[in-house]
Image 1 (cartoon, helix red, strand yellow):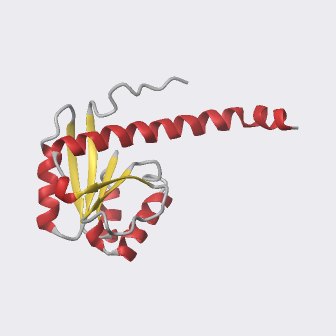
Image 2 (image 1 turned 90 degrees about the vertical axis):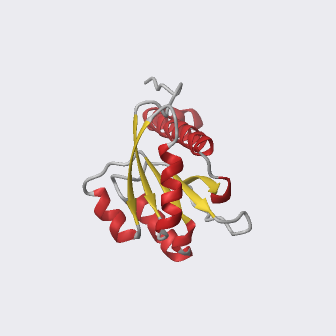
Length: 156
């Protein structure tokens, strides 16, 4: 199995933006729309219920979640996305207000971005790196599953 990781941001990307502050989400959306090198289609959701509604008709390749949702709703949203068959392998980046806030310790979050440093270049780098990392993780998992029995036979 061969994977192409040369330019993971090329082509069309479907990005889901999740947050409860329309003003901040519009700023994020403006930066996302200025990313060069890929056509980006966006959808916006304001809470877990609207996220699930969007997923009925939208297939995101990437998810940005604003930490203004609040710690409990943020954790619930990430857990729900991680357990959803449709979104479990999609990279998630959390947009943070401050570096001083505690980060959520979950493997579903591949990156954090500070909102005050948000730029089209930062978003592009996050998209590129997170998509490459997620594809690499999925490839390694698939290879491991195929060769698991051979590996177990070596340890016996």
